[in-house]
Image (cartoon, chains in turn cyan, red):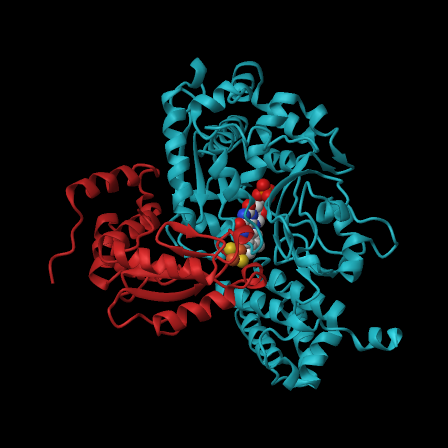
Length: 453
Length: 171
Ligand SMILES: Cc1cc2nc3c(=O)[nH]c(=O)nc-3n(C[C@H](O)[C@H](O)[C@H](O)COP(=O)(O)O)c2cc1C
Ligand code: FES
């Protein structure tokens, strides 16, 4: 097993309570940072660790922190993004439920580094039971003197609150999240200004993902040096992967960045291989928004090198033959999966979740859902396949926030790699009448069939 | 219809919640308050309920309506005592969420979006609930029911029927 920076103590009974967490070294990092390091030192450590945003975009966290407007006389805010709504992603829920104090400790250190006196954790409303767990842990942290006035006798004070959303994927986008936290509809803002200059209540704000913030105590504890020893190149440290779909062992796994994809899928330590003894057809490696890859391209790059779990390796080949690490939502599909139907569920999702501000996204996601519905149900035309590509192209890059891109990429990539399967649905409508059409007889590309016979 | 008003205990909680945000930013407490209101007033937000929340926050009613209608967890029409929300997104579909929806429709004698005649169950499909590793799954109130099979769904319906309690995200 690789290094477990985040989940090392996950199996300790009662680790969700303050006492047990503290007994196992919890809050040592907060103590070290607040008592022996300056704010700038903490920021430098995070910079040097190479930690990158775990919410999906992978932006260097230390650099993001250093953009925060420190000259403004307004209050500064740290907001933790616990909206986690990207299909296939459930690692933040796992982390908050099992290790609430790790996130709280991360919030304390990060707020200290940024000079925030009030911080919020914005959690998706559906996770209400997790919110209760966090609130209980926060009360414990107040009682132990790690939150509130003059923490550990220093002049640093912090109030920490959890704020529930109410069902909207778009509120995971950081500026929509801030709107929502202000009690409004979750409509993404035009940038600039960026939150670092004008975020929550128009004050300088940093928004970070749960896992990003939970990685900070470890960096302070073991030093940035040891943290970035793990990983390859610009992918340092460990990453939580949410593994779902047709595998033997779905769940959350902490991996060292750099682990070969093949090992992740087939090793018993991780996914444990494809269920029911079937073979691998495709993987969506970083949450529903990233391009889907067929088995051959997820295991090896187009150049024939083993594909690794890093930001760089997963995107090797660009959108022609690569994908992205994204949020680490690793969705595995076996040979019986209908790519069109899976994509239709994604398109339905994006249509449902588009906030409606930008016409290309509002209208385009609806058209894509409709066209995919008709192809999947055997009412499609041959021209529909190119129509989908055309719609996706017209959404991409033409919206205020990246939800439009997130809706377009899965469509474009599925057609890029599985076009014949879409055409099959149009050509043989009677063969796709049964909603489980490929379950008994997996789809085989005609090209492949010819090669075999 | 009786007057819409929170209990004194709830009003204490409300002022505590408002206190979490800077002065003049009390509107930030809107989503938390709407969750409480929905839970206390039969699982949905009527216009009088929303007007009441507006008055507590000293904002215009329209500011509440536009928010309540934006977020999928708020019901603007009455729902059954138990709101069953089955996840239907890709990862859940891969592990058989369609079968669960079909089974529930048959068992309850309703279609998705409908409520049983006795007002006990409303069936809804929702998007990824962040529980894809335990798919197929559904949410009822704050609880997640995971790794569903048709048998476990049957058992759940029996249990919910026996409890007879109204589902709420807040419990
Ligand atoms: C449509 C959309 C949804 C997003 N959802 C989330 C989310 O649920 N959680 C998250 O941390 N980031 C999400 N993001 C990314 C955030 O905008 C932001 O980049 C992130 O919270 C920054 O934190 P990080 O740098 O620590 O990753 C989303 C972005 C978009 C465009
Ligand atoms: S797809 Fe159903 S919980 Fe994620």
